[in-house]
Image (cartoon, rainbow, N blue to C red; front, side):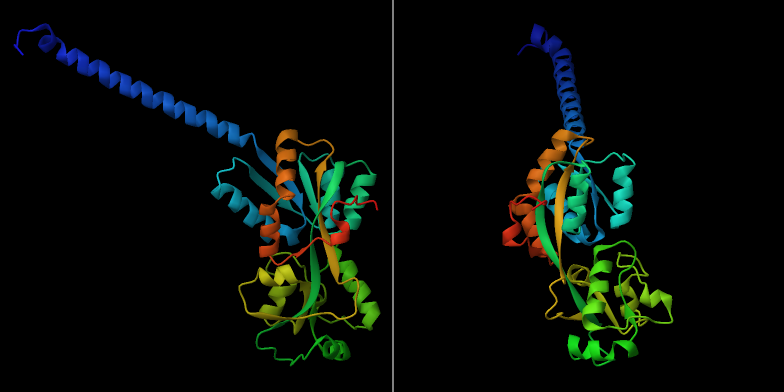
Length: 285
């Protein structure tokens, strides 16, 4: 091509135009991604939940992020009393997960739940010792016979396991009192002063805790089943709040909780399936 041709003279202009088009396309693409992010943020779900559900909900959220579902969860873990106060105060949230059927029934009766709640899973109370088991606990019967001699850490406060342990004490005539209030009244939450942490740190000989809390610990622990005690199992229920902050996202996540992803997350965290008799049943029955 001759150097004095029109194309030759305009080649710099053409190159500049192509460069500007490329830059414009990149900017528009970036803007489109930003819009997508804002949309996903609109599908964030605020959940109030019992502390024992933490391992399962964290696993479920990680799975949702890995699958790029666009749904994310913001969870506040509260014991039963604090959870009730949050709801009564009109705290902005979308869903609630309770560690007892009774609390979900109470929330439904007071009109705090929209529609039918969902039975999610079951959890069970077990006796726990360290792998070394310095007190040589053989089984629950052995513990029951020696309970007055042992330092026992338990849950405390307004938690479902508190009522269970109270009933357990009466059923087996257990003596769980101890001079060290930290041991007798250890919290079951994932804090350093928890019942299982007290056990791991050697501040107690045994602990009474949910099996899911045992599985969440890094330390090697052994568990003993509680025989012939019908109240050793509790249920996890989920419900959409009557005035959710984000109704669409709340219903979407509630559907996820009813699906295989949630069942897998709860099973992986050590929960048992919801009792067959409860599946699909109203919590008022």
